[in-house]
Structures are given as C-alpha cells and as structure tokens.
Length: 487
Image 1 (cartoon, rainbow, N blue to C red):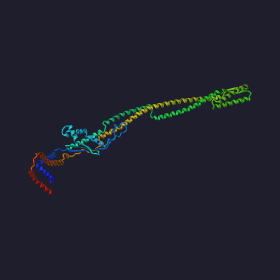
Image 2: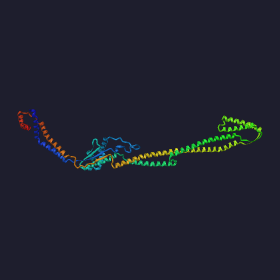
Image 3: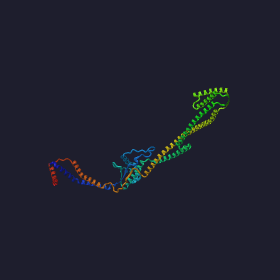
C-alpha cells in the first residue's frame, strides 16, 4: 500500500510546488522567452557571401619553371598529393598577407566603420571561413558581414587577391627580364663569333676543309705515283747509261779497214772466232753483269784471242785501221741516253719538290682546319646556349601572358554570391529554443525553490493528530487522482 502511494505523493508534492510558486515560474518563463525574442529582434543581422574555387591539374603541376631547367633537358617535377595541394591553397587563402590585401583594397572604414587597419584584419580573420570538402578539388570561401554588399565585396576581393598571389607563387619574378637580357647578350656574342669564323675562313681559304683535304690527298697520291714511275724509269736509264759506258770503254777505238799481204786460213778462222766471241759477249752483257763467271770467261777468251790475232796479223799482213763502228754506235747510243737520263732526273727532282710542297700545304691545311674547327666549335656552343635561352625566353613570355590573363590551374566555380536574406540571427530557431528553455526553466524553478525551502525548513516533531489531519487534507486530492486513473 505504501509503495503504490509513493509516486502519487510525489506527483502531488510537485503539483503543490508548481501551484505554490506558479508566479515565479511564469515570471521566469516570460523573462527567458522575452529575452530570446528581444535578442532575436535586436541582434545585428549577419549576411553571408560564398565563393567556390576549383583546383585542377595544370601546368603548375607538370614541370618546373624555366630557371630550374636551364642548361638541361626539361625536368618533370615530382607531383605532390592532391590533398596536400588543396591544403596548401587553403592555407594561402587563410594567410594574413592575403587578408591585408583585402583590407587595403576595401578600406578599414568600410569593414568596421573606422580607420583601424589592425582591427579590420582581425575581424576579417575571425569571420572568414575557408574549407575544402573531403575527396574534392573544390575550396569554399565564405564571409559573414553586417551587409550583403560588404560580404560579397570581401569574398570577391579575397578571390581576386588569391588569383594574383597564386600566379605570383607559381612563377619566378623577373624571369622574363633575365632571359631577355641573357638572350640579347648571347645573340651579340654569337654575331662576334660568326664574324671571327668568317674572317678566319677568308684568311685560310678554307671554304670546305673536307673537300679540300680530299683533293689534296688525291693530288699527293697522283704525284707519288708519277714519282714512283719516274724513279723506276730513272733506274732503268741509269743502268742503261752505265752499261753503254762500260760497253763503249770495252770496245776497241779502231778497227781494221784493209790489210796487205797473204791470206791465212787459220788466221781468218781465228778472226771469225774473235768476232763470234765479241758478239756473244754483247749478247751476254744484256743478261749478265761483268762479275758473272760467264762474262769473266768471255772477257778472258776475247783478250787471249785478240792477243794471238794481233801477233798473227803482224806477221801476215799490213793492216789499215779506222774508228770502230761498234764503239761509235755505243757512244751514239750513250749520247741519246744521257739527255734522257738527265730529263728523268730533273723530272724526279721536280716531282719531289711538288710532293714536298703539297705535303707542306696539307700540313698547313691541318693547322688551319684545327683553328677553323675550334672557332666553329665555339660558335656552335654559343648557338646552343642561345637556342636554350631563346626557348626559355619564349616560355617566360608565355608565363607572363598567362599571368597577365590570370590563366592558371585554379578556376572560379562560383563567384562571390549576393544573399539579401540574413543568415543570423535565425528567428524561428531562436524562438523555439527560447520557448523550450523558458518552459523547462518555468517548470524546474518552482520545484527547485520548493526543494530548497524544505531543505532549509527547521525539523519539527510530528504528532499523530497532525499526521491524521495531513492525511485528511490529502484524501480529496488522492480521490481526484484515483478517479482520473479509473477513467
């Protein structure tokens, strides 16, 4: 019986507390709800403007700038992760330098109503929101301001300043001027090198060193062939002249023209034999040298036959002599061969001189070719550098044009929006929250006050009559709750 009546007693006590302190609860409800309504009506209106940027893969992610690829082949940069790239762009948008540019562009008076640049920067930093969606390349930029125009202008100025800053950070300043100066310097240096090369070619006469070398080498070959043939002919003529000289010296200066006296068969046969030996000797001279055993034998036989024949002829007849025909023929042949030998010697000397001159020219050609090759190599190196700098200058010019036209890998998906309706305070939400807070407070305050009074009430001795009187007072209330429950 006591357990079933306990919840009912608690409800009765709560009802009594609410009834007893109903004015306080209602006053609290009115104050809280009225305060919420007053705050909602009097709070300054906040207007939000939002812009969105899309960061795509562009030339900023592909290669390094021309100053990093100078003098070498194009280098492919190691691309960073998309997440880190997006986070980098978010940090740039949040940077103080960018906010300062926005404040300087709009003016602190327009932002906070007075000339205080530092306070305007702090307010912008607090109310500016920059965030990126996960697994997305879109960055959202928003700002809450007292007017929709100011919010829109702040977001627009921030996006504008960011596009300039993004272009500046992804390009090297002064790059175009540097490459223009270097290209101009190399062009002048190349012109001077080409003029020196032209003067050197005019001085040496080397229009085409390879063709000239080929012609000169062919000329050397022809001269060497002619000299070789001349030397062979000279050797033959020298041998022929020596042979004729020996033959002329060996032949008798005179010969028998006529004889007087009787004839002798033996002497005649000996004379025939002597002539036969001479003929054989003449034939052998064209085949053998004087040191050959056969030639020696013929010489000895001829000398012996000549001696015997001379002795016999002295005893037999009187001989009349005349110049020897064979010796005359030999001397005549020698007179013909000696000029030919002299001509061959002159020709040999001339060819040797020509060969020496051509070889000297070839040596001079080699030296001149080295000088021309060194000058040409210098010109080629300068030209190669000039081409590299010209290419980089063109890249720098393209970068300058892209920067001037704000062409980059960042695109504006949504420009700064203009929203005429305030985003705060939210009237309906504030009213609902204020109502529920006031209602809960209005119900809880009487219970709290009643509990506090009981705790602060001094202890009293309960009497039986008092308890019964209290029970009698509670019976109508319990009966009312019972009827409500039965229904």
